[in-house]
Amino acid sequence: MHPSHSVQIVVPWRPGCPHRERAWEWVQGRYAERHPDWTVIEAHAPDGPWVKASAVASAVRATNADVLVIADADVWADGITDAVGLVTARIVDWAVPHFYVHRLTQDATTSLLAGTPTTGPLDEEPYRGVDGGGIVVLTRELLARAPLDPRFTGWGQEDEAWGYALTCLAGPSRDPRRQ
Image (cartoon, rainbow, N blue to C red):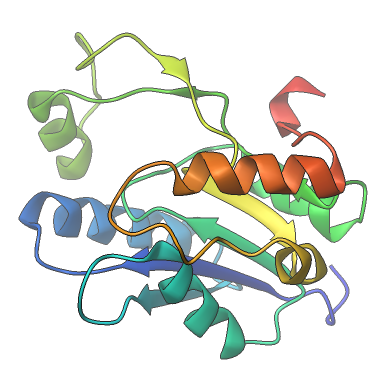
């Protein structure tokens, strides 16, 4: 990767939920292990109602990275390396490194966090993830043209709206495993 193509992982974050804190600790370990050259930043939202857009915007202003990974604290996708490669090479302006969401049961989560294989039933059937949610890899330029909408407060619909905006401006996302 050319030195000017830096990668920044921006994780919108507000502490206070023990389950999400444990998941975030595990996800941080994965990033450190698999991508030690990528910078990870916790993007803290201001006090008051949760506004994902405010958390992301503040963190992005503090970096000059060319490629940004906007990632939920409790999400991991093995396709992230390929998604970053597609965006870094300018093959696409944005990519989503996951197609299906697999929600683990509490027992499966405990096993995963303990480092043991996760087997058994999921909390629900796998379902199609939302473009704009989970993990989104994109160019800094595209984020400037299509930022998250700060009018969304709380949890819900901000990811869907952002996915539609990104699609309208840059075409459909690319899942690197489904090229």
